[in-house]
Structure formats: C-alpha cells, structure tokens
Length: 240
Image (cartoon, rainbow, N blue to C red; front, side, top):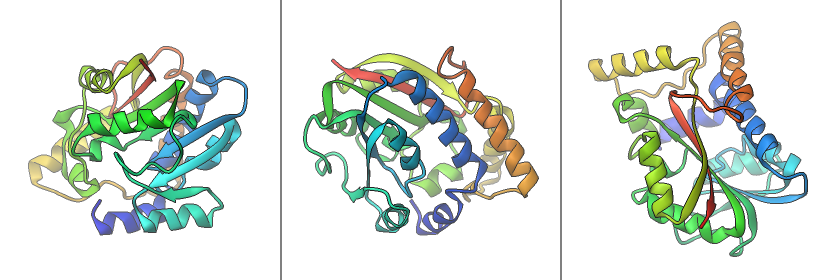
C-alpha cells in the first residue's frame, strides 16, 4: 500500500461505509457457516483489526499483518494482533486454526498460490478457509494501484488458484452487488481519465449511512444463495 493510503485507512476503518458494510456481511456469512463451539480463528491481513471484534464472538481470534502502523491501531483496541507475513512467517503453530481468513489479501501477493499454501499450514485438517478478493480484471483502476494490488479475479480464476493450492472449494459468491453499477462506472471513468487516486473518500453522514445499509443487506443473500456479480468475490474452502 502507498503510505498515504495507510494513513487514510487508519482514519476510516471504523467509519467508512465499505468497511462497516463488509464487516456486517462477513459476520453474517460466518454465523451461518461456523459450528456452535469455541473456535480458533486467524485473520491474516487483519489491518486495523476491523473484523477481530466480530470474530471474538466465535472463539479466540488472532490477527496477523505486516504493517506496524495498522497493527498499532489493532493492539490499541485490545486485539491480539501479531506481526507476520506470508508465506514463511506465520504467527500461530501449524494446525492451530479452525478458521483462516484472507480478506483482501492474496491480491497483494506476488505468488497467491504460495500464500494460500502457507495459510493451509495454519489450518486443522478439517479447517475452513475464507477468502475475499476484488473482482473483475476489467475494473482495474488507480484504486488498485494505490492499495498495492497485483491483480483482480474472476470466479473461475479464484477457484483455480485455490484448488491449485490444495483446497476443495465449498462455496463461492460475488458480493457488493447492489452498488456494482455505480462503483464500476466510477472505476472505468477514472481509468479513462488516468486518475490514479484511491476511492476511500467518505461521503457525508447520510449518504455514508445509506451506502452502508445497502451493502449490509447482502448479508441475507450471500450466505444462502450467492450473488452472480459484484465488485468482490467470497470463497469458502477446506484443505484436501
């Protein structure tokens, strides 16, 4: 990530409609998927810990990230957030995790297959992998550059990468579907203009609240039926 974006991320992680809506959606997916017993959860790429408070509902949650600035925010909020990096520097013992989350992470890696294989070492044999990535290479824009992305994915492309890394895919869905037309239009317009700025600019309070609610509505659909398109992809898999 560009340093300027990291500073904005720290400021916006608890306020911006995208982060708030995504947290609600992921929480809905996990409540439907996970067994009703205490679990060990590893959030790789936890950033500021935006999701860790939600994960604590399901058991012991450990965060992992490479950024000292983001980890400082997560630790200040009382989260167990540790410095580590894929593929060689995991922060938990092999087989510790019942659930590993890689939310908006593998698109940053030079070798996404190697990163997924490394995450597999942290999982129990019957553990669950939850991955989220940006969708559609055609939506590539300056926002991706600012965030340090290497690629965007199609559903088939993500499935192929995950299966190559040694997982059996159980479920896949697009999300951020309701707002897809507006976001796609903005991304394509910016690319045409050569605008290389990120998109993390919070609108006014009313618009921000409306966008959050629209995004969060998808929590009722994504865990049950899946969605056919969207700006992001969600995939759930188990080790083979």
